[in-house]
Structures are given as structure tokens and as C-alpha cells.
Length: 322
Image (cartoon, rainbow, N blue to C red; front, side, top):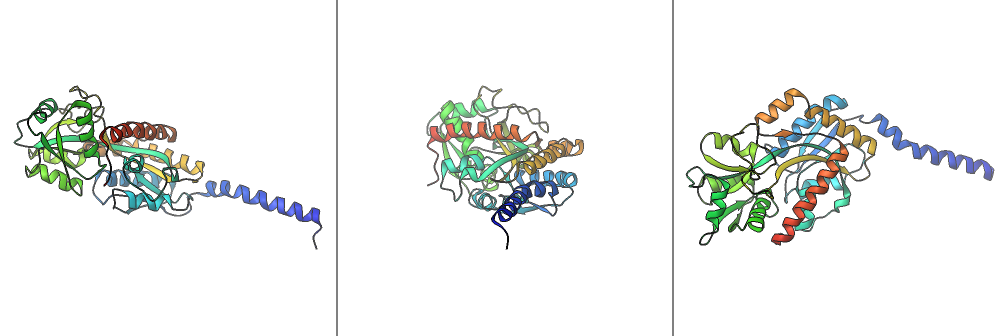
């Protein structure tokens, strides 16, 4: 039998070994494929940014990164899956604005604290569009026209979508009179503009630029802080006097809370390097997407600022999912 002293020493040694296991696990990471959960269907800005990041980061980390599309419920399905995943560094969420705004608007099956920001990938600026035969040539004319009579119709991709936030910024900040017509997706919302069923909407640059360049849609403004490299003739809303109209379709990486910080840092560094690859930059910018990357701390600050900014719009508009 072990003496009490020997038992105590063995117990202490076992506890010490258990305590250092996470560090060893982090050192050995990654030892098998990593999963990026995309809470949207294939083909959109979030999905394309996820695939670009996965392709570049996998080469740096030395393991495949598998894209797993889990669309549904305004990104809640995919987000909840990651929020409840093991924090072992093998499951990450390709996040968007919904990761900071969903809980302000609707009930969600997870806590915001269940996820932590890891890395910014990039963004697709939102573009305010009208039918090709629309009489408005810029955002000023559109907003002025909306204030007359009964106003104008604005389609969205549902409650809390980026077009819904753009509408909220225009109505609460600049007195635009817009009647919201909600659709189930961004594609349906844009189709309503193409078919002259509504007067306007906004959508990711990567989605609408081909139709703008083909003359099927007219662009009034981009809602990001700088002009789009792939379409530099389009002024920003800020340039036209709408300084509070600032939003984009961004994609980042969030991890389940408890994921080792060492692993988070490795992921952030790999994505930053991937987003600075000249070939990746050229390809994404040609599509109307801005690759960003950066540090984990810079993405944490971005998410905090985004939450504060969007929170003001939610409060001002009373935006709620009925």
C-alpha cells in the first residue's frame, strides 16, 4: 500500500501532468483536419471569403481545412453548432455581423460569450442599388424622393440582415421614408429590384457588381469607408453626406469559448498571412472583396465597435424579429 505522503506526491504529479496537457495539445495542434462552419449557403461573400481563407491557412498550418455550410435561421443554425462544439481548435465559425447583432434582435440558443473573436478575413462592401431605369442618379436624390408622398419600397433579406440595417441607418439618421419589404434571401431581394417590384435595396458588392456592370442594375453608393477597387467610379455614401451609413458584409473567424489562446493566435496569424498573399489579394479585389486579415486583438476591437454601432441602429429603429 502507498503511504499517505507517497499518495499525496503521486496525486500532485498527476495533477501537474493534467495541467500541462493543454499546452502540449496546443503545441501538437493541428494533428488532423480543421472545420470552418459557414452559416450561409455556398456562393455568397461569406462562403467565398471562407474558402479563400481556408485555402491559404491550410497551406500554412499543414492540415486541410474543410468548409461545412450550415445555413438557416439568419445564421443561427451554424453559429449554435460552433458555440456548442468542443473548444479543441478543430471547429471554427465563419462569422458575420449576425454574430454580434442576432442576440439584440431575436432569441438565440447560445450566449454571446460562448464564442470568441479570432481573426478578420475580409469584407464585401454593401452597394445600394435601384432598377436600371430608375430616375435617381445618386443617394441624395433617392433619399429626397423617398420623403415625398408615401415614400419608397425597400427590400431586405429578412429582419437583421445587412439591407435592413442600411434601411435603418437611412431612416433614423437622414429621415428617409422607406417601406420595408422582407424576403427570405439576398438573391430574392435583389431579384425584386431587377423586376421593378421594389424601388431599392443594398447587397454585397460581389453579388451585384456583375449586374451593375452589365447595365441590369444602377448603383447609387457603396456603404463602406472607401470606394470599391473593382468599381472605383461609385462614390461612398459617406462622400455623399451620409456619414453614418457604414456597413459591409464581413467575414471573420470565431471559436468556441475555451479554445486555447495559443491555437487562436496560430489561426489568426495563418489567416493574416493568407489575406496578404498577392495572388489572393488580386483575385478577391477583382470580385469586389477587400481582404483584411490582421491580429486577434484588432478583430476583437472590430467586433466590439461593430456591436456598439449596430446596437444604436437596433435601438433607434426598434428592430425585432417578430
